[in-house]
Structures are given as C-alpha cells and as structure tokens.
Length: 361
Image: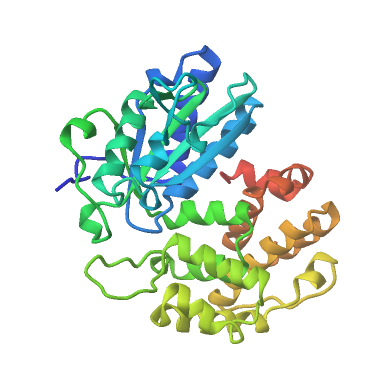
C-alpha cells in the first residue's frame, strides 16, 4: 500500500507557486519539459488537486504571455482504446495504424503551452493505468507522442482514503515527482477572495476553519465538507439564491446536515450588519461590537469591494474600518490586497501605506 508519510505536505498555494517557478524557469531557459519529471499529486477527495492545476495554468499564462491549453482527462471514465486510439488499415491496407485520440490533438505553436492533466489516475482500471503510465514516463502511448510544449501532471486519491484506488507500482512511483496536497484554511481563504467565493462561505470558514475539510475515510457519509464542496455551496449562493433557508437542501446536499445547520445559523448574522452600500457611500453606519459580527462584516465588505472596485468607495470603507479595532482594519486591508482589481486603488490610500509600514503583508 502506497504511503505519503515521507512527503512534505504542501497546501494548494505552496504547490502552485513551487511548480510555477519550475515551469517558468524551463520556459525562460528553453529547457524541454521532458527533462522535468511528470508530477503526481496525492490527496483525499476534494482537497484541491484540480484547483492547483487551474492556478498553475492561469499563472503560467500571466508569467509567459503564452496561451495555456489544459487538457483535463478523467481516467476513471476512459478505457485503453480511448488513450491509444482505434486501429485502422494504412493506405495500401498492408499494416495497421492507430488513429490519434483527440487528447493528443494539441497546438504545438511557440506561443502556446499545453498542460495535460491526468486526473483520477489511481482510480482507473489497471489496463487504463498502464497506458497512462506510458504517458507520464515516456510522454507517448503506442505511436503517439506528446508535443514538446506539453507539461504532464497526474493526480489521484490514496488507497488509505478508502476511495476507488489501486496501488501504484514501485517502478512507476520511482520515476515521478510526488506531492501530497494538504488543507490550509488560510491559503484557501486567500484563494477564495480572488475567486469570488460567496462572503457567507469565506466568513464562516474564517470563524470556523476546522469546517473546511471533514473527510473521514472510515465514515459512511455521502455529503461532507471539503474545499471542493464549499466551492459548490458558494456557486449555489451566487447563482441560485443567497437565501440559505431557501436553498438549504442544496447546501446540505453538498456539505452534509451536520455542517449545513451551523452554517445556516451563521448566515443569519448578516441580517444584523450595516448595509455595505451605506459604508461605501461614506454615510454614517453603526459599528458592530460582537467579534462574530465583525468577522461577518469583514467578509461582506471585501465582497462588496470586489464587485465595485472604485477608489472613493474603497476609501470610505477603509475610513469606516479605522473606527474598529486595529485587527479588523489590518485583516480587511489584507483581504482587499488579495483581490487584483483592488490593488491599484489600495496604493492610493494613505491608511494602506501606513499599514504596510506596520508590517501588513
């Protein structure tokens, strides 16, 4: 049974930054990607393996100015023919040739980088794994070779996660670069601010970070909280209704009743908060005293600022934050600084520069 005990756990942010640094160095030096081992990400369901790949792709585009084309292959749904292709006769009908699968139809242009993501590799049947392993090791299957501008990243659950998973052969494991993806509430919060996760979710998980991930391999629950399922809850609140009572069965269906009920109670706090629109307009607004209300307000203000990135409004919100304890102001400024659209506005604010001098990161 494979074990990740001898790996240093990295959160999604650390992992994405580390691999980005490696891939950028290779692009800038002209080093072929085949000189770098294929990467294998291990972790429980919903921990953020796919999210790490999306972050790497987006950062590569920004760092290189090239388009990054991601081919996401869910190996659990594939059979060997899907990877190797279908045999057909050649032109003079003397030999069999393999028709190229669609996943190998990649753009080899100099202004493009390809990222092949082989997800659920440990859950695929052994016959599919054999074909996938040839891709990770030799960058080819049968007659088909990956282009030189292609990065290969695989991901899967551990056998100890009690998900559908097969042990990885030692000979293969020794030729991959392995990482264990770990949960980190602070790193997830920073990502959630940039991604526009609903403030009810970001606020609650700041209040109760232990609720971000409650995966029990021995449990029988079908719905449980993970970074992935919280992102699903956010999508429900953003696209269907922000009335948690109205969509409660959907929320419970994602994170389970045990977590959904206290989350629903938390969301009721937002009805007691001053209206962010009033604060951003520079009008007089009450200052909550209870710590949980201040935490909820901080998430509401950051979300409002993200939706309406205007200098005057942000300045009014920061002035309002100065009426609260320094910790509230500091964390609110940190939250705003995580949102790219707000960074140029923060640079024009003296309170932000003062905070920088006091150690705001």
